Each structure stands twice: as C-alpha cells, then as structure tokens.
Image (cartoon, rainbow, N blue to C red; front, side, top):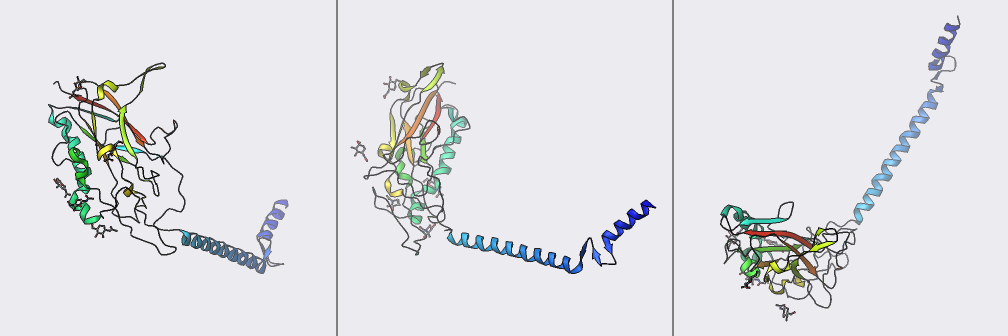
Length: 294
Ligand SMILES: *[C@@H]1O[C@H](CO)[C@@H](O)[C@H](O)[C@H]1NC(C)=O
Ligand SMILES: *[C@@H]1O[C@H](CO)[C@@H](O)[C@H](O)[C@H]1NC(C)=O
Ligand SMILES: *[C@@H]1O[C@H](CO)[C@@H](O)[C@H](O)[C@H]1NC(C)=O
Ligand SMILES: *[C@@H]1O[C@H](CO)[C@@H](O)[C@H](O)[C@H]1NC(C)=O
Ligand SMILES: *[C@@H]1O[C@H](CO)[C@@H](O)[C@H](O)[C@H]1NC(C)=O
C-alpha cells in the first residue's frame, strides 16, 4: 500500500488534476517563466549585436586599431636558408647553387624596373613619404615608391646572372620585416645594414668569431641604406603596391672551404637595439660555406 501511495505522489507531482498544476506549476506560471526567458534572451542577443555593431564601426579596414609597440623589426635573408640558416654549396657543382640563384630570381621578379615603373611612383628620396588621412577623409589607396631591381647593382641578377654564386662571390639579400607606421630614422638619417662576424660559443665562456675569414663586403644600394622614402608603411590594404626596400651584400673574398658565421644588423637612430631576449630583433645570422674542392 505504501508503494501505491508513493506512486500516487509522483503522479500528482507531474500532473495534479486538483490544482491543475504541471510539475508543481500552473499553466500561467509556466507561461510567465517562458515569456521571461524569451524576452531575456532576445534582450541579450540584441545587446550583443549592438555592441558588436558599435565596435565594428570604430574599426578601420586600412589600419590596425591596436598594435604592439614592436619597435625592433625582425630581419630576414634571401635566398631563404633552410631551418638551420646555412648557405652551403660547391662552386663546381651547379646543382648545389642553382637553387639559390633561382630563389633570388623569383624573389626579385616583382622588382623588375618595368614592373616598378608601372606600379609605383618615383618618390623624393631621403625623406619620409607621408600620406596621412585628413580627418575622416581617407587618403586611400596610398601610393608606394619604386624600388628598382637595378638598385641592387651586381646583386640584381641582371649583369651577373647567377648573383656571383658561381664565382664564389655570393650575394645575400636582406629585408626588414614590415611594421606599420615605423619611422626608422630621425634627423633625416636613414637606417643601414652592416654585416660582420658573429660571435659564437665554442666552450664554456669561450667565444670565437670568423672576422678574418669574411673578406671585403660590398653593399647595394651604397652603404646598405634603406631609404627613408619607403617609410612609413601603411599596411597591405591601404598601400596595395608597396615594395619593401632591400639591401644586398656581396661577399667579395670570403674564405672558401670553411664555415663562416655571419651576422647582419640594422643600424638606425630611431630603432632600439634588439634585446638579448629577442634574438631576432634587428639582426639576422647565418652560416656561409663555399666549397671549391670536389
Ligand atoms: C624580370 O627581369 C628579368 C631579367 O631582366 C627577366 O628574366 C624576367 O623574366 C623578368 N620578370 C618579370 C616578371 O618581368
Ligand atoms: C626605375 O626604372 C624605370 C624603368 O627603367 C625608370 O623609368 C625609373 O626612373 C626608375 N626609378 C627610379 C627611382 O630610379
Ligand atoms: C598599383 O599597381 C597597378 C598596376 O599594377 C596600378 O594600376 C595602380 O594604380 C597601382 N595602385 C596604387 C595605389 O599605386
Ligand atoms: C656613404 O657613407 C659615407 C660615409 O658615411 C658618405 O660619405 C657617403 O655620402 C654615403 N654614400 C651614400 C650614397 O649615401
Ligand atoms: C682575400 O683574402 C685573403 C685572405 O683570406 C688575402 O690573402 C687576399 O689578399 C685577399 N684578396 C683580396 C683581393 O683582397
């Protein structure tokens, strides 16, 4: 009998015909609850949409609203060395250096004079090419300056078809990573690249460098400068045809058949020197080994 009573209580809880309650509430009570939640969620969705709309209105397609104060840009070299940053080849083995020449051909193709003349402007050198928006009037798309392939002289691949790799006088091309709004030099002084021997560890507290093996270096454009007219950079969307300026370094008399550890860095009076913490800021290092014996 007790069992029956329990069953009856349950049944009554689910549907009580006496008070007409379903799960302990009347139909109107349930209706009110559902109505409350419905309005509540519609309100939340509306609030979300409104916030989103307002936030999106403040965004500019052409310019990031927030940007880290990443003040020291990274540097990269071409031809792209493999993961270990090594360029190793034998001058007698065409296959060992041809891939470097081909990589440079491909990399430099967009810098062909004819293409630059068609896409970009001849700017006033040695000063920033500032194209600010005036108030709400966006000055887009923004123009970019020509960086002609021939600026790279013997490293342009035009006169020296194989960028000197074949003669053991290879060219390395350096570029600075793009940073929107970066003004790399003040007082009209352009940043420039210098390469030298990299200090490396050979034992505990023992360091070595290959400065005697590097030989003469020649930079293109002269002095290895990144002309100020290529800055500031306004971003991919605002400055569609932007061509990053390049610096080429030609190793005229590097010691063959030995590893030579090289480091190139940017020198600029408006870019802080990369910290110990960020080893890639403002510098790049690689190993060059040119074999001349089979
Ligand atoms: C760029 O110039 C080089 C050498 O003058 C030529 O071989 C190459 O076909 C050109 N590339 C383009 C994309 O015009
Ligand atoms: C780049 O090359 C083109 C075509 O040869 C030339 O008309 C233009 O003046 C050059 N630009 C600069 C900045 O020297
Ligand atoms: C970008 O280059 C194209 C040609 O490739 C040119 O028609 C266009 O005007 C250039 N745009 C800007 C903003 O320089
Ligand atoms: C290169 O640097 C030297 C010495 O700093 C300077 O006299 C020369 O004018 C510079 N050349 C160019 C093309 O900037
Ligand atoms: C090239 O470097 C070697 C030493 O590594 C030196 O003896 C030679 O004089 C240099 N040649 C030139 C043309 O500088």
